[in-house]
Image 1 (cartoon, rainbow, N blue to C red):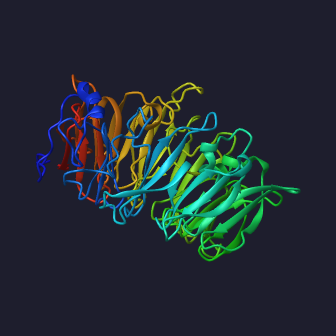
Image 2: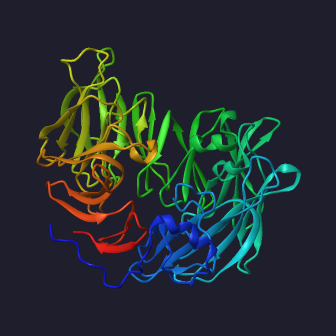
Image 3: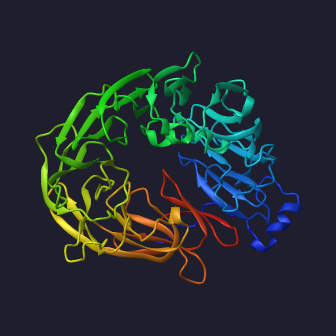
Length: 532
């Protein structure tokens, strides 16, 4: 690994966090002052800009290595966001626009309302304007075409609006039904937001029905009945949305038939009964599991392109072209054969042998199947990582061997034997396996991290005490902050074993499109550097 390169542009100098309170009482210019302390940062999805929270406002650097400029003269960061996570920022997926929620005094007990500001058609403008007051929450649609938000409507109901061409709010849904335990701040979670419109539930005489309202206007369309538990934010667990934000699937209450709705074509397609379902990453295929049979459907026609009988669980590779499923050998002994083959035909599977699933599968994965799935693909689709129970341990033990199986050669390699539950995952790109006793993004506690190369079996120790980590774009290394020393240290750990220190840091972000990392140190100083 080569040493990290220096930034191409000079950075502003910053003072210590002890002087942060002075920033609030002094006038600041639009570029960072000597007293500006950066506290959180995030790239836009196109990698062309960097959004930053600071003690004296929210800043934008476009391009990321340029000097940040404060947005719209706002002289405070995300109020109430004590974790400094840019919780008030909403960034369009294509990086074209940015919205900020500015906290207001609340009229209703237990709710927080906001002013909504928008900035820049291409995330390069720092001049913003307020488009709404009394906002509960806001988001962009998956295709970034619409900015939508919720407000308190009449009679305590929640209304949904979108930003019109003239810059004013356009009503989309007058009243959104929430569950009895839902709060107003949960209102966006009560919706299925697609690029063409919004699906939501209504309670009627015959139960809970699912409706779809196009953004283009017109009468809403009733799609069918759903289970009563899907009311309000319960709808979150009652549907699957394709990654392109166009198609979603749900299960009808009376018939238990899974349905596909293509919001761009106003097309509803029945796909059959099932216990669980998920889309491939590209959104072209839908995986359905029912009666110990795995079905793969085309998402545009609902046609079955693959059927695997006698299976207990299944998963598609990231590109959707490969299917891995467990063919049951003995239900009593909980043994299965791992089969891997094309997702669009049924006569070309490779048999990778019999294994016994652990009592608690240690692999974290988004899956379809009955119960937890003890295997997952690596991001490049070359390997299946399986958890195999250690037969030498007592039956109640959670110990399992993590095995990497080359789907082309059939070669199997044990990476490690671990005594933990839900501790391993495969990177979403490349061939890299990461194991940690806890999920640092969810638990907020420092943990250790190990990296495994499934091709060679090499184990690389990443850190003993970290709070956050990210995998690089190629899936060959991990960038993390190690808290084991006197100061938090930003490190790049390659699966080949190489380690490069990037210096002191307590927050960082990786570019989603380039080979660079942006980070702030304990003094609030910002750096943007190339990854080694």
